[in-house]
Amino acid sequence: MKIQDISALEVLDSRGNPTVEAQVILEDGSWGQAIVPSGASTGENEAVELRDNDPLRYGGKGVRQAVANIQTQIRNSLIQRDFMDQSQLDHQLIELDGTPNKARLGANAILAVSMAFARAQAQAQQLPLYRYLQGPFTEAVWLPVPCMNVINGGRHADNNVDFQEFMIAPHQAGSFAEAIQMGETVFHTLKALLKQRGLSTGVGDEGGFAPDLKANEEAVDLILEAITRAGYKPGEQVSLCLDPAASELWQNGHYQLSKSTGQILSTEAMIRLWEDWTRQYPIVSLEDGLGEHDWEGWKALTATLGHRVELVGDDIFCTNPALVQQGIDQKIGNAVLIKPNQIGTVTQTLDTVRLAQQNQYRIFISHRSGETVDTFIADLAVATSAGAIKTGSGCRGERTEKFNQFLRIEHRLGAAARFAGRDAFGQ
Ligand SMILES: C=C(OP(=O)(O)O)C(=O)O
Ligand SMILES: [Mg+2]
Image 1: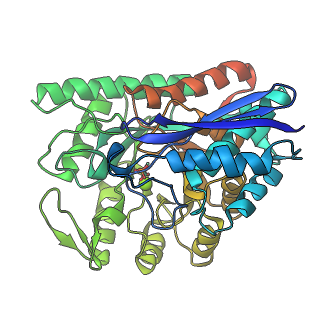
Image 2: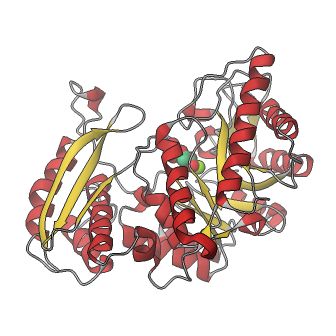
């Protein structure tokens, strides 16, 4: 079926920065729309997010050029053409861009069109998006564990906590709906606990609380207490996932805890810290425990902890199949974080998922810290049978809308729905 029209406009993300929205209309009137998100603690090898650099508009963060690229070059090369499938469309976009990292047209422009086309095709084929995206994957009936980021630090909050994300994983649930209820109960209990301790209940970029604390460990202690007070057993019903986003701490070959004590740690000291934390606390998943340049450190971390903890690569892999392949070859990590805008098309995102799964690496689907109410990643998680998703926590609409989409999918699947549970972390 031919593409009849493509359009785009500049809209806003949850940080109030511009981002790209695209619409694709097919000749039968089927229609798809999508908005791309934006990261703050980005990996160096991510596909290029095109910004205008005009200091008089949004401090240089406008995306008018990316929008113009959709309305002119991309539109001209796609309309009145018939694409057999998602892959053909995406490869046309990659070819048109002509660079290895989508620097010419912008990954934000390309991904918005790729996602909008997927939605239009799903509508034309009368399929829910998760079924359209399912492709050669196993049956799309698995709902992931919602890993809710309840304390924010690092680049995502103006507090004194160095590590970026402290998440709860309510894995001992019978359904996604029950997991959300458990997670929200802990979230609200944590709020009451912070209030009682005289700590701030203001939230960071991803909806988790962002208090100033005595030490990074206090974040974990508070969450464990909230889990217990909420009536759950830490480690049995609700465990922890961390994303310290260690690339952000990396300075001159060391890790610097500059928001708290200023302590400077070697790679070996960081590995020891994660060994201690994962023995002491019920941590099932550790993302970016070391930085993207520290491949030797990652090898040692994987050899030390990989048999008992999920080690997720975000900045080091950038959802890029070539980098994931290098990681597999060098035995780095055992799971891949999947963020479609790190690579820039739906097809390449699915390629990375497939490569990881074929090599027994788990996948963990992720939002960005700058989000919108677009729920594409929820359908992507079900389509790929991803065991886990992180999409913030309980009180910001752009995050809860993803939870709501999972609730809709679970409702729609009815008795066929399955909840991933603890297996999602290889435990
Ligand atoms: C979601 C993350 O943050 P950002 O979107 O800022 O990269 C992350 O680091 O995993
Ligand atoms: Mg990360």
